[in-house]
Image 1 (tube, rainbow, N blue to C red):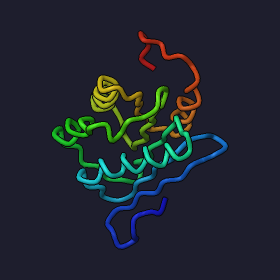
Image 2 (cartoon, rainbow, N blue to C red; image 1 turned 45 degrees about the vertical axis):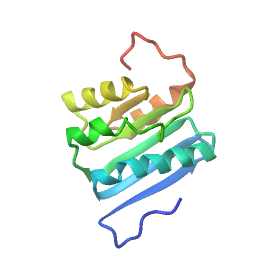
Image 3 (cartoon, rainbow, N blue to C red; image 1 turned 90 degrees about the vertical axis):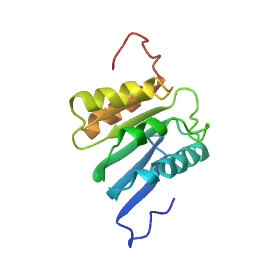
Length: 141
């Protein structure tokens, strides 16, 4: 899919890595929370076109302002972000440390998304590569 115009204060690129079967969504700049739903909707549509089960959202070059109200409303999406069974989302951020990381993972897991937050791209890709494994319901990784 095409990136947002360069005149915008932020951009988003969607690229499918066929050899790895991973859809990479890369954001840059000051991404307004009002755009999160559209970014996610476009990612799921693009992933569906490629029968994709693995998503890597790379937000390392983005500035995201997370408000609790935005985070709370995102999963209440009337099915707009429905992913196929077994889909995984690796969220790559500059500093997903401490409680914020734990909260994001638990919050999304409780809403049916298998999402894990990383600050290291290699670790994110290794986790995505494990997508064929059966999840351990008692595991945290």
